[in-house]
Image (cartoon, rainbow over all chains, first blue to last red):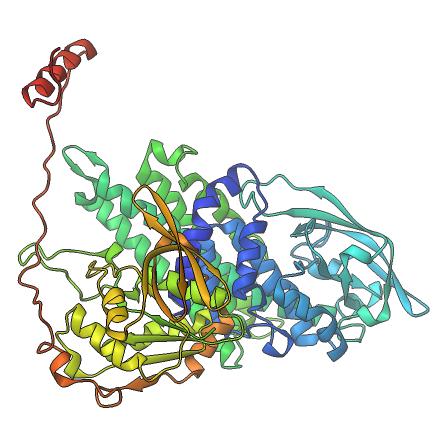
Length: 374
Length: 260
């Protein structure tokens, strides 16, 4: 029923708007509001706090379907349900959970997650945003870059360092309620190749004063561990986002090769096309299954890090390959903005980069295969 | 207000394929859905129920349980499936008899049905049910206003609408223009699988065996077929002036236009 409901929903409420969301850079707030009404914005939050507490397999299914409709909408949703909620749900104190989770669950608040800085991308430990203790507060200075939902969020956990000399043991995460924290500023909004409906901004913290109650987990030095948890968990979502985009491109090809005729017959009658379609379909199915497996291992409470990294690496790879081939199958029409293929091609690229580049995924898999320090 | 909504599980005819040899519906592999106008009926009930409860009722095979669970996920309070192999072969009249027997076991102020099912397309069950129960009926409802012990509705006509007031209890059938049915929520889907669907057999509803199933059906489907296509039509090619002349000639031939 979940699958059938979410498919119906995306057909009516997202797909018809997806082209405009991309071409006109419209922030998909209407789609997010409707997802919130269905309870989807709270899908990763325990029922106790108003969430739907869905298992990871179900969340993965939802992410794929929304991505198939509109990657901009799915990343806006994912940054909230996966990145923002994770630290609070898994590491928040009881008081923090009660303060923040209900509004995130209902969708009253939109969430984001801020780690990346100009000098801290793959080298996440190199965070330079400082948090200095001052009485019962911390004063935070620094800036974050490329933050999804940055300019639209009501709540964002940010990764800072309380002790630069301690390197990864010096990181801490603070929950920021953006509307009532002086010193919190939204900087430049990025103009991107793809996911153009998604809001990606710089965040600037100028002597931003934050009460010590906002230190997630209540303990300094937990920031690195929590961040790694955020990304291990989030990568399944990005892998399946890639699958969704690939599936959308593939579905367009199915229609096109049945209708388009050259040399006296529809394209689907040519073996070259049949081979390409078979290859694409197989890769999409394999990538999807890898994502579902990672989600299933996570649901069982077992170590899912290797599978999650594989899911993202392969899902994004397949997304690139299929979207490229899909334009090729459509020939000249695939290159034109009247058709959605060019949007899928542009959207796919980021899946190889954000939430941990493909290169990082391979290192993570290597670590899991050989053990740390190999 | 306590409301009963009658729903039918139907094949999704958007996905329909016709067997080219037999000319009949291919049902295998076609997903089943709640009949679309029954979804509108559920939504209408949920909007006006107030302090009361909404019960969905369906006559169908055991698999119709899935449709009832979807109704629960939308927010109805109770779901009843009336299922028995004695009902097999029922036409609309026999179906209405079965539903009437079931309804007689329940308390209600209002019964809402969808106008018609997308597989049978008869629009007969709602009115037949009303007659069976001796209730007034208003069909093709596109807007509802609740009053004290009455319902004031807009009834769609081909070229307008009429406003009708009906004293409760009444049976209405609704058209798809009446509302946008809500989606099941995630919490609703959870609840749907935790709730027990009430199941009644022919004996539970004390149905008269002569009035149900094949025996109780005064009509039989003799044949279903795909009507022959209208054909491609005549295609005219050439410069506009020439085509225009040709077209006028053809229209005159068919006596669609005349010379003064």
